[in-house]
Image (spheres, rainbow, N blue to C red):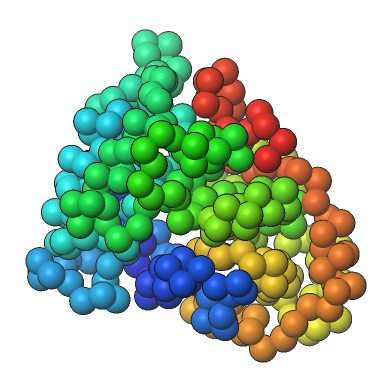
Length: 300
């Protein structure tokens, strides 16, 4: 979840960017992707070339301690230096909720509470636009924005570039149908994280959260197609026109992920899975619930 520490290491992200740029009406067959995320502190990847091949260009997330406009470009430039790259394909705001500026990932006060900040997201967005103009990123987007926050950016006076994507939690228990339709109407690609449910990190997810892949209906559809519940959950998103991020380090599961293009769900299957929606969110970010830009107070 820590955006400034995440290094995304898959060719699939390059494919995703092709889709984002093309703005296709429906996702092509190569659209499914998985993302191997590893901390920069533990990464054994070393990129020695200053100008990397296109397949090595990835995306970066702007973490919440760098939302003040004066810190945006320096944060990206620092990441590029560490990666040995001239630019990334996509640079996105990780959360609309700002935290106290500085190098601490989670700045806390003496009582252990996170120290938040209030930053006008339009100013942050303008700083991202300058990064694009400077050639440091090919595209810019957002993550975890609700429709009102997206509208705030879209209606910003002097807007140069609108977000190419909005990356949000999205799965059968939280299908984001209204947000998906809104994004489609604005030509913004919806990107789903936690598409298989959550990895259940106790720092972010409540321990009594339901296990999506154990859902009886999802398993019934999987049995019908002789597929795994995970494949059904991913195929569901692809057929809705959602870009899918499915993290895996397991070679078998990665192969299974690509096999979702070997079958198609019926309208009845899609309706049944639509019916699983309960607006259940794994990542609630409850520590920020009183922040003026807390994104989950809105219906979508």
